[in-house]
Image 1 (cartoon, rainbow, N blue to C red):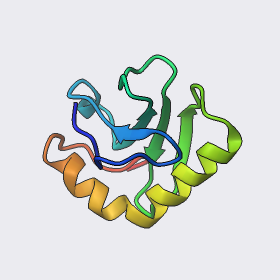
Image 2 (cartoon, rainbow, N blue to C red; image 1 turned 180 degrees about the horizontal axis):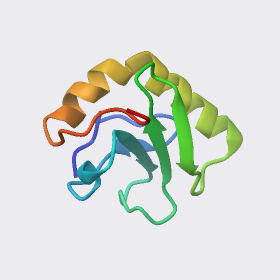
Image 3 (tube, one colour; image 1 turned 120 degrees about the horizontal axis):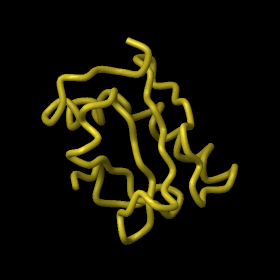
Length: 92
């Protein structure tokens, strides 16, 4: 399960799974277990904006912090995604 980073954002790891790569680029936000149950899911657009597909256990403040982080780092995150998937950004 590839993590985008080894550190947490708003208390959550940001990652994707090998099963996820059939979809467009997105980010799961989960606790220590890195399970999809209770995790948030953010689809990433080509400008770094995100669409929350599933908020999981995340509250509004955590979602905003994660969205801001993705917006600032989406290009770097996309390079990690592209190593596993040929699918691009959300909406393309």
